Length: 135
Image (cartoon, rainbow, N blue to C red; front, side, top):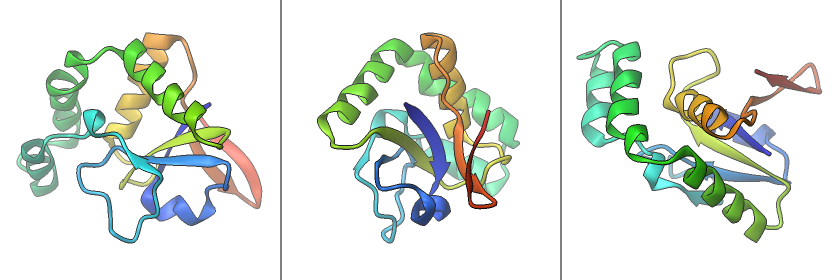
């Protein structure tokens, strides 16, 4: 199964989780298994969003237009599953910087994959020492 999460949560992700960055810049300290650059935002979009030049919601619409609209959610999902199947892991987490609840391109990707493939791509989190899936 595919989940989403964020870099600061990496230490809490289980060993059986394949950790894949979809951020334009992966932190040097982040121990990820791979990067998936086709889902990265552009440097210009990232600069505009982080500087406040465009509101977060507009940045996500621009991300959809500039990146996701040029890709196939079915093809990307198959590629992610292939990467997972080649690993010795059971699940996969798509990672970027923002905490759950913040406007974030990984949740846009998750919704895009969900709609395009009729699957669930929840946010992975642990609360009160129990696994909880935020949908």
